[in-house]
Image 1: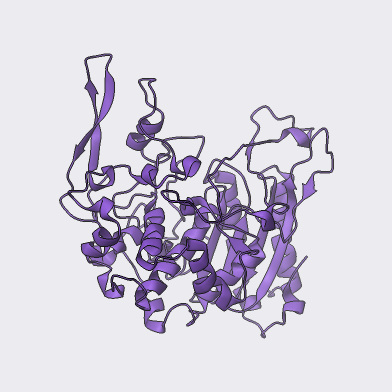
Image 2: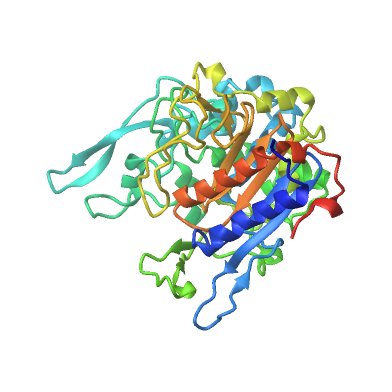
Length: 465
């Protein structure tokens, strides 16, 4: 007969799993929170935010208030802002949720997507062709798409947009195989909106491709309301949740200067007996301004700074369907399969891609491992991978989650009223050992659901470490 764990035993097992992972050199350190709709059940840290060095042997141990770059974990916030704008009728053009499948909602606010705009984002790239003979410059081979991009497609990454890190054709734009000067500049370096103007890699509405669709949704929010994006985030998301831009922000300003966490990679030449040699810092340069000037934009698809304990408040609001953000009908739409109305059944191989730049990402064979091979994975309007069947770690159909490029991961399970967020700062993305740690932690949670479904805890009783 199995004896159910007590809550202290459960949180102790979670902490031990985190400590084992840092001791094994899987990452420099972690933050991890487990939450219900209204309560933090676990708020733990392990390892280092800044690794010890020969000059600073103590390093900087991870603390609960450290604010790592959550990157694409923040895409859910941008989706909520745009859904709120549409549901409340706040666009100057009068567009609403009824216009999710109306191409005019895109082209009127984002004219770059119009077929006659002359912009690259209005074209589909088929490959490259030589220009000027055998030693000539490679040029993009482009065609007009047969269908037009809609807001739904931007929400669900089915617009045909991709990233340079997961599509070889776009990688060619930035690191040409002919050794010549790159054809485009990375938008996260420059902040130039014009650098988001790259061609589609697939016919709109026909396939899932992970790309900078959220940056175009952010432009939709800014242009359709005439408001600064940080002001929108404060007014729509943070203020109703009693959060401030000092706790959650897309700008790493003074409030975060002492709390951000360096990004690392594993040192292939590390000395197993010298912990200071296990990881090497990666210089990360991103355009960052509190209010971007004309023609500039925060690269919101990879920007979001917050501690796990602060960002959990946003994820809790999603779990409890907070009506200050969306109505019950709006939440129902946001939770639902966003790809099904396009005639896309979901992906039997999951939300996956091949790495085009291995320094940025590993291959992603599937975002979450299913318990049954016939389970498809799809995407909801919250830019989250929506599970249509149980996962190997124990999550049920209807749960969803996403990730950030430096190997942060969250999930929300509205069926059981439980969720979690794991943060670290290690690249490349989808590191197999960190994914295994993520899944191990989830399995601990789902092996002990009865414990988590116990009496309503007070925060003093349940917040650990």
